[in-house]
Amino acid sequence: MRHFREAVPDKTTYPRRFDILIVDEAHNVAPQGHGLTALDSQRTQAIRAISPHFEHKLFLTATPHNGYRESFSALLELLDNQRFARGVQPNSRQLEAVMVRRLKSELVDWDGKPRFPIRRLEAIEVDYNAEEKQVHAWLREYTRLREQRVHDATDQFAAEFVLKLLKKRLFSSPAAFASTLARHRETLVGRGKDKTHPRPAIGILRRQVSQMDEEYADDAEYEEATVGAVETSTRTLADLTPREHWLLEQMAAWAAKASAQRDCKTCARSPRPGGIVKPDAKWSDER
Image (cartoon, rainbow, N blue to C red; front, side, top):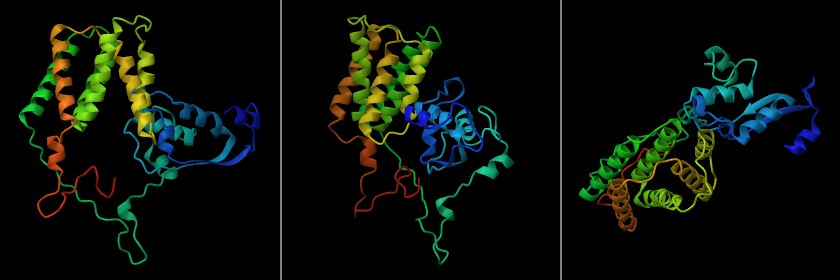
């Protein structure tokens, strides 16, 4: 940004200093979240700062937007602030004038045949065993107890994030659940010994959580963002009650054992007799 500012005048000039701005993976520059939680990332701020100095703009992405109006309208405003405004539902005719959307099903070869396989979805029924049903019940109880002790908006935001993330990780895999649960427990237990970290404000929480919605090419970077968000949010929560402590211990014990085994979901996705693998929506040919 410093190098760019040195190359452009302080104010927008006409004609523009540069001809065209091309932003690939443009969904990464849209604000993450929705409503009051839609926060500008550094990428958003960078594009907003440099875009007025370009005569034309071309935003490219193959990733659907996150579904939040605030985020989508802000991305359109970066593209053309004369037609669109952040937080305002875009006019369909104006949108058609600037947006080209193409689906894989529309792409054909010279003979008119589809270039990509037809997407077929098939639901796979997962029959959880007694242990997995029990850990889900423990997490539901832990969630209920935590939600009963929410005192203000900061508590509510932090609790909802941590508890939803734990549920998401539990449905993902025992190993993912174990790592997130461990960080949650360690922060709760260690907080009483470490008084150097004050209770974070809700604005800090939102910025930390919004980083998880960004695209990461490296899984390690995503895990680092997740760990930071879990630690920051957990520091806001009240101390554990005896029952909550017991529930965490039980879930942690199960996760440690289950991480080294195949869970029911993995078994359900295993090849059928004869080597045929059932298709899965998440791993189909077309996203």
